[in-house]
Image 1 (spheres, each protein chain N blue to C red):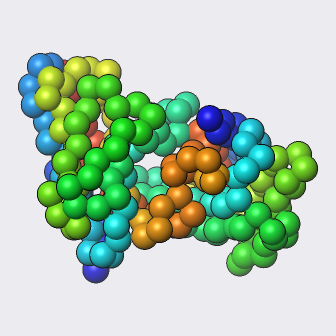
Image 2 (image 1 turned 60 degrees about the vertical axis):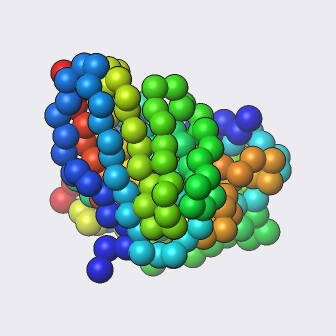
Length: 112
Length: 113
């Protein structure tokens, strides 16, 4: 079945720097991709949902890139600020299963 | 108004005891999910449901049962709790299955002594 590897597990950057979190997946039939943000002590909130036909997806203060050839999904936070400090999870779904597989998470700390 | 709620928010149980975690959603979603979250594992799917009366095994169903008596409610049952089931449990709802966004509850922190 689908396997999702997320890197790095921990990331610390200075305010204003960029931060990149990457997920690789195994199922070539995957076509829906998600990034969730979990603030400390809180639940998961959707950051962005991406369909496989779109390689570049712009959000507010971040970009999600999808490389289907390499089966890689990345979340790029530009000019990170302390409010971005949280855990981030990617999630991947495919047509072969009726489930979403989550990455193991990245704990991001943005230092002032 | 929170659309997915869980109760209790915190629970301490003894080994061998029965634990029931409850989830309620007002999204009118067909699908509901139970996950556990552990450091180094992310979220792992325990059970899920397509609608009232249906339950399906997820990736780690052993030691857990689920019940979906209505569209709104989905319970996770630990008949004989073990310390290895100490974790944070999240319930989620979604409308159209694996392609849809999941909406998560606030989580239940369970400690099994």
